Structure formats: C-alpha cells, structure tokens
Amino acid sequence: MAKSRVVHPDEGRSFWQPVPANGHVEVKVEGGRDGMSNFDCGMQEVAPGSFVREHAHDRNEELIFVFAGEGEAVVDGETHPMRPGTTFYLAPDSRHLFRNTGDQPMRFFWTLLPGGLAPFFQAIGRDRQAGDPAPAPFPRPADVSAIEQNTVFRKLD
Image 1: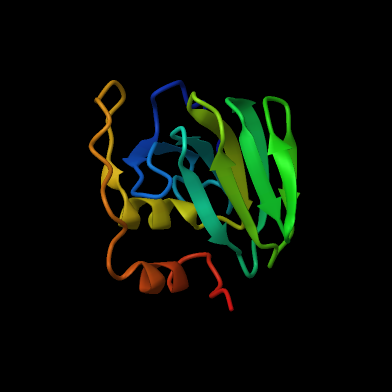
Image 2: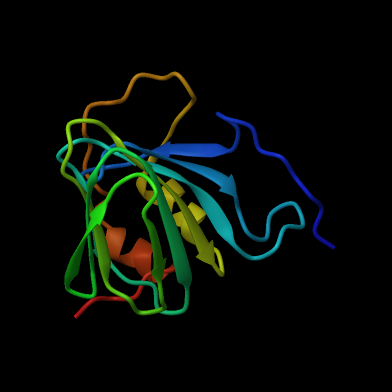
C-alpha cells in the first residue's frame, strides 16, 4: 500500500540536463519507489534560448504546468504559448517540444503516468545538488537513442 509523502524544496533526486535543454530536472516522486503509485512527477528548468527536443511517449500520459518564464510548445504540429498558469495534457503518442523564448529560465511541473522519466533523466544527465553552479553545456550521451528506447520514449519517424 502506498504511503503519503511530503517532498520539500531541494529534496528529491536532481540532474543537470545536456544540450539542447540545459537547465536541470528535479524528480519529486518516482513511481515504484518507496511503495508509491506508478507515476513520476517533478520540475524541469529550461535555460533561455534552449529547448526540450521533439519527442513522444508511446504509452504514457503527461501533464505539464508552467509556473515561471515564457516560451512555446509545439504539440502535434501546433504552436502554443507557454507562460505561467498554462497547463498541457499530452496524450500517448502526442509529439511535443518545449522552447524557452524568454530571457529567464522557464520552469514547469510535469507528471507522467505511468512513470519512467526519472531513469531517463539520470542516464542522460549529471547529478545535481541544490545550490551548485550550473555546469558548462555538455552533450547528450552518444547512446541516447538506446536510452530512450529502454525508458518511456517512442522512436519518431
């Protein structure tokens, strides 16, 4: 049986993200860990001028809630503004990307059901501790396609 849990600011696993997103991810709840239900949620920060490349999840639903910064999302070919208060529901197989078009970090809260994003973020990123200065931009791993296939992403045509 799942047990309630409180995760405070700067708690949970966190990973610096490679180009093109830069920024970092904080995993607040990781499905299947500590008797929790099978979903992941957390926060992602995308640096100014950076983006989360187009991708899709074959069997996962995703919710995104923007709470800081500004940008745009392209969802199934249609462009939408990303600004504080915007919520996105992304159905399985929905193609989407997120681009920071502002001059401040863009921050959003994400939930993925069922879970599986945390292992991806760990595999492509670098461990982060709260308060650490951001590293210089670093490349995605050479085997990122295999990492994606072993987590929650579907191969795009």
